Image (cartoon, rainbow, N blue to C red; front, side, top):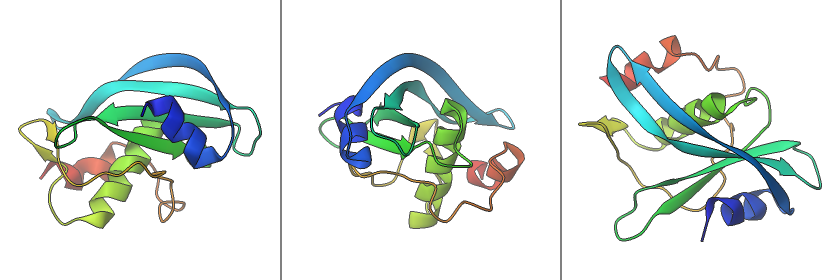
Length: 129
C-alpha cells in the first residue's frame, strides 16, 4: 500500500504525483500532526486534486487519502479536514506527546461533515487539550 494507491482507491481514478509538502500543524505550541503530504492531480476528475500521506499504524504504516473538495484546497487544509474527521470519530485527543492517535483505515478522510467548518488553526485549538 502507498499514499498514491490510497488516493487512487478513494478517487476511483489514476492520479499523477505533483509534489510532496512538509506539513506541521501546531496550536499553542503543541504539534497536532507533522509529516509529508503528497499532492496528486486526479486524471478523471472530480475532484481535480487529492492528498495522501502515511501515519504510523500498529504494525505498519496506514495511509490517509483526502479529496480536494471544498474547503480542502491545500495540503494543510487536507490535514485539518482529516484532524476534524478523526476528532469526530473518537473522544480521545488527537495528540499524545506529539504522536498521532486513534484508529485509521485506508479510506478517504473526506471533508464530510466539515463543509461548514472554517479550517483554521483557531478552530483546531480544542484538539490540543
